[in-house]
Image (cartoon, rainbow, N blue to C red; front, side, top):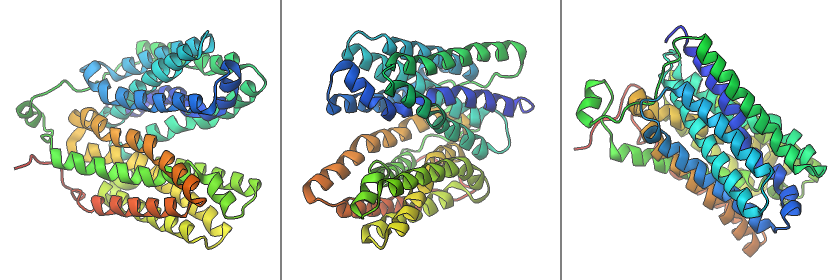
Amino acid sequence: MKNRGWGAVALAAVQVMGLGTLYAWSVLIGPVQSHFDVDRTATGLVFSVSIAVFTLAVMAAPRLFAAQRLSVVGTIACFLGAGGLAAAAVAPTFAVFVLSYGGLFAAASGLGYSAGLQMAVASGVSRTGLATGVIVATFALGAVILGPMMGHVSASGALKAALFIPAVLLAGVGVLSLWVQRACTGLDAAFAERDTPSKAQGNGAAPSNTRLTWLLWWGFATGAAGGLMVLGHAAGIIAEQGGSVAVAGIAVSMIAVGNATGRLTSGAIADRLGPRTVLLLAALMLGVATGMMAMGVSIVVSVVALAVTGLSYGVMATGYPVAVHRFYGATQFASVYGRVFTAWGIAGLISPFVAGWMFDNTGSYSFALLLATGSAIISALTALMFPGRSQRATSEA
């Protein structure tokens, strides 16, 4: 498998890139409202359902596909995702649309993402942190690449075409995956079987550590909450501080660049420094950035701070799966990370809403930014309690 390791990672990256179009949802909001004659609250429900289903699918994948080849799981996810998008394109009612996009397509995205991350840690490559970063970054890249095209097509009144574009792409990736699996041998990495603790120790995996799992969960939850609270309202923050629409656009672009950079590089850095150091620094950077925005020093400072916020959030997005692998090993990675990943799902559902509520009730983002700063500090303090670079999880006494 070592000779085929990076090839397997590349295949997984192609699969998750197509599935990552789930996060291009915002470009469809207006067209979906017009097509189904629903309000903004209803369209907000679509993404909330998508986040919840995606999170549950990431958590359930190791159980549903225990001992199954990851390349096969990724292929299944591509075909399921294509089916979900196609069903959404021809949905006769808004309820069917929600079930198709927020249900089937989101579930397929979660399954494929879980399989891709497991491939990164089980592929046999020596730099698993870098491989994890590739998967996390390419998943986000799917929305960056296809989002503008889908937005342009849907804005012209062709919602069906905008959904069929990624559906056809995913079906094509599924066919390509089938061909690669037939042409190449050695793509046999799989989700781990559900071992008992004693068997896990015999396989060289650390037994599950409930305390450490909860620490990882809490660190991810507070870090992601602080980041999403800001990223979900970036343009509004700039507008409140007197920035123009053009400046807000620049800020959002810088956030995207920072996020992508953090996702792609943090795994490789964690390979060298260890995940505790990387996640601690990411949380501290996030706290400084949100604190500077809360002070309202200047528009330039806030734009740079938003870029740092995107970078910090991207580092965490890769750093936490790398940490789970470092502490628990490849055998337990998928099941443990599935539990830890629910922290992101909860943060994504709650924190942007809280920031909006605070703004509506105070007329300012200052309180939300201070709350994000406090959340980042809690994440940093939590990261200090993670095992060191050479340590793995141990059973609790």
